[in-house]
Length: 401
Image 1 (cartoon, rainbow, N blue to C red):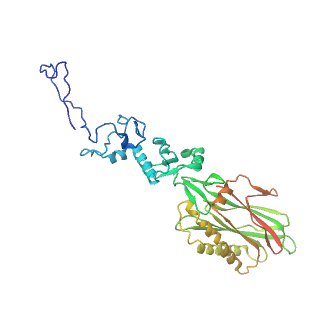
Image 2 (cartoon, one colour; image 1 turned 45 degrees about the vertical axis):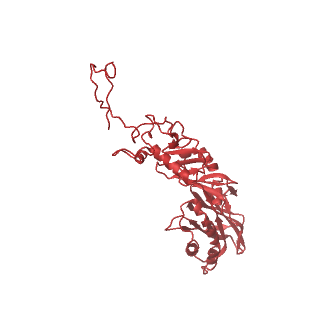
Image 3 (tube, rainbow, N blue to C red; image 1 turned 90 degrees about the horizontal axis):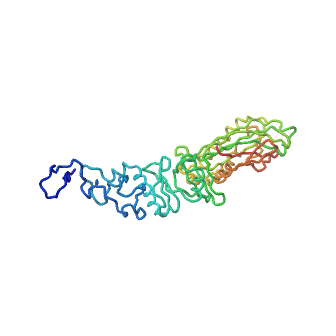
């Protein structure tokens, strides 16, 4: 700290020695010019070509409100004083701007030149650019770039104030589906050129029942039941796939033209792809539970072998690698089921259904459902399953969770 002589307290010539009050030493601190504490205006080139007369907070450069006024480029701080990095860390706005500009540079300035100062949005910050916006929820990042139709849709949902929250990834391409996806704290926005943006978190797959187009060749009505196995990727390293199998109740007295509604939740989770195996069985002398256990074991074994290459992924875009793998499961699952020992009942037919990310998202977002005989509401139907002289179809629905 430095001290300087105060001006005389009574009028007179500066070299006049006959003042009534002597000159005194001031106790007010004097910041030595060009030190790290000296509050001089910053030059525009220190903050970038667009800062001009105000800094990124909108305050006049070097003013008392300017939190950067103590930082002097190229001038080391005084011994014992805070460094520029200390000041940056102590001021959230500076840290946030540094984080966002680092992201901008990492993107090779693809967002274009900034068209706004640093802006506070909810608990986070943003800077708007010519080609989108970079957001960070915390001052230290990470920061993410959002643009195009996905940004427009997110904005229409109220952005960071929406149920989606802040971005957690950049916009990423979805391999095999020719689309894009961006993850947020509580869901995703998917985009395909032919569909536009669609926001979704989890989906629910539900089995809705069967319809009889023709009974078996034996006398009387049919007694049938179904097993439905679902293989879904999870994205977790220790458990990359989830396999579940449901056994329906026994449908008795089924005649031609009869619809039998049901309601079994088969899957609830992210729309990362699904492999569904629907098997319709005619009850004879066998045990439905024995079929259920054998079918579940067969599908689980085939899925474990076939999906070993999926591994873990951290984004929906990474999940797209599961699509071809789920499709490839159709053959080994079918062969495994056909090789089951005769357990006393007859398999009328089996039908695989493989759904990609795009198909799941579109079906779940679809508001309308088809209605069969005013009893079964559905979005997915199997092809005709024929066996033992009969013909049936199974029905499913997909919706947002």
